[in-house]
Length: 256
Image 1: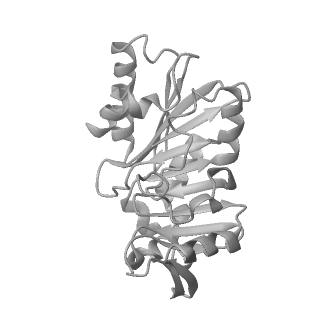
Image 2 (image 1 turned 90 degrees about the vertical axis):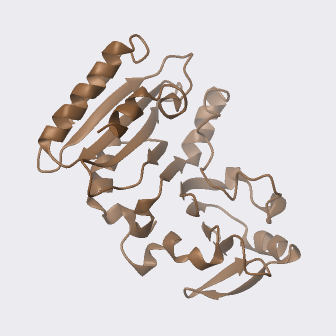
């Protein structure tokens, strides 16, 4: 994704890993297993109908108004269905883009291994880093991504370079048996902020015991410190609880 999307909430999902985990326990991984895309989560019928399925998406990066999916797609079938539903193609940003006849609503660029979209035709460029730097080039994203490690899902809050908390994200890790750990990572402006936040997180863990039992809070020191909270789930807890139900750790970050 282009770095212009840093002002948005950004969600990454490894669809391949999610499908493996759902094979172990479909119910536990229901809440956070699908791409966080408004064009997939709608009451209206999708313009591609059955020519595009979630199982074809291997990785997804989405914001509230744009996204990028990697996978194995059938461009001929998808574009034929779009055409049947009144979509027309034309050049935009040097690519063949498909949009509704009135020019409103979502716009798509479709190949056999990639789909890019924006919820509004005029906003297509933010989903394409070909016009500038990407989020992967942003220092705070590098720090937080490295902190989380290998995850099958990551939810990033908007980047705020002028505040004590620069960037926070929640990552989901799971082994082949479905044992899940939620990893909360926060890039902050200085060591004093890192130490203060770490103390607040530890206080929440203690105050809400045993809700966050087994949580480990650590601080990576340096010019750009990062605070990390690793929170193991039990078999009765669904992954994603830190942003759905047990939100006290997230709230402690917001209070900074």
